[in-house]
Length: 156
Image (cartoon, rainbow, N blue to C red; front, side, top):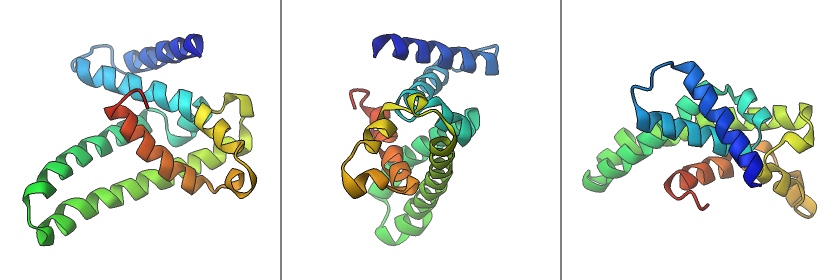
């Protein structure tokens, strides 16, 4: 798994570099590169492509930032303010991102070689019985949470 991971990281860094010839934000470059690599390895390059590639990476990074901001604000605001002004907008953003990813997963599962799908999708397909025939929306919901968690803890 190490060699494919290095190739994926190399492709991810090359795509980010090609998108911007100058790395004005080194942290942003590293973050986008690692996220792209995670999505490619865990869900598959066909899923990333179907989700919009760079646009999906940018949307997911915005989502991560909004969660961080919302968590801090919700901790100090009264519930009556934090729910409609802070938490519900982030929940809507997550649902939109989940729908986008679910459509990409469904598209990739229909048209891609199963060997090109990521390890999470391949593992989900091997689950017994009804669990293997899961809707892409459920997989996308789980993947969004796992991608966010792995952003915080890469060992996930």
